[in-house]
Image 1 (cartoon, one colour):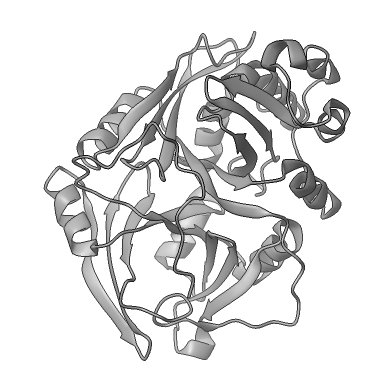
Image 2 (image 1 turned 90 degrees about the vertical axis):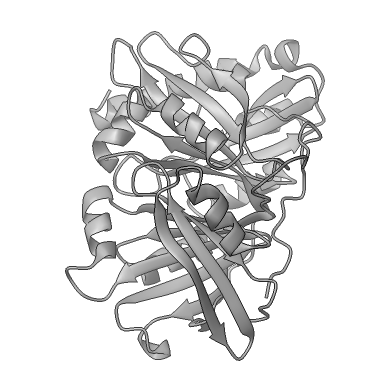
Length: 379
């Protein structure tokens, strides 16, 4: 079993004082997908995830099949229904493939459930105990924006491969990893006028703190705009930016997401690496497609961010963006959507001291997204 899921880097601006919902890290992210077996092959091949566990007909589970993949501290669960008329199937029919569950690793699942529900969370699952020969897992859950679920996973008394009901998955096919380390943050898109509602939810119900805010002046182009606020838990290991659309001349990326996802949901998963040049080179060689900014972005890069360790031409060749804050700098790049609908995508990020989210890159990035929207006919 993987026992240390905590992020490698915890920003020094956070503390644990009076944290009524201590969270140790991201436990797993579960996606509902149309064909989990093919999706597992994709995430192995393209992103270098390693096979970990399986649940389905071979383990006595009759309603769904699930594959669990891992890379360092990141765990993805890919689940598909085995019959029509299921909740998973309905979710896929409405939203397409996408994130259903964001599970958090906690010391006490019952405490986490009680503390959030008494503060107004809508219960999804009261505390359940699941057991096998390797011990017991306690889990509970609450609803958040859209149909997204937060599970609280207590695994201190468990030594199995993943969860009870899963067995070790050992295929011969094992492409190498690409250097992904942990979940840096996850971004949610919500409907117009709902951002502050969900900011208050994370603040009041889960004890998170707003650490950054971007308005339509910060995140805008000639045609589109959005607003965003970044929420973090007490120790900084869980960060959830929340986006909502803002008025613009054309349809923003958030509006496009909401139209095709048919509601609020997780827009992108940002995963960290310690070597973004090596990681992105590996991903591109495996067929992962990235957004590209105009090459003149790099003409004034040093003037904007100062001296950096990386070779500018190498960054330019790969399309990697750079931004700086008072603590250091970061490097980031965004994939194109990884599903048929223009909804979920991934961000690859390397932090070299910076605690921010690339505000200086917003304009170039959003213009790149608009070019993709124009090609799709959805701008």
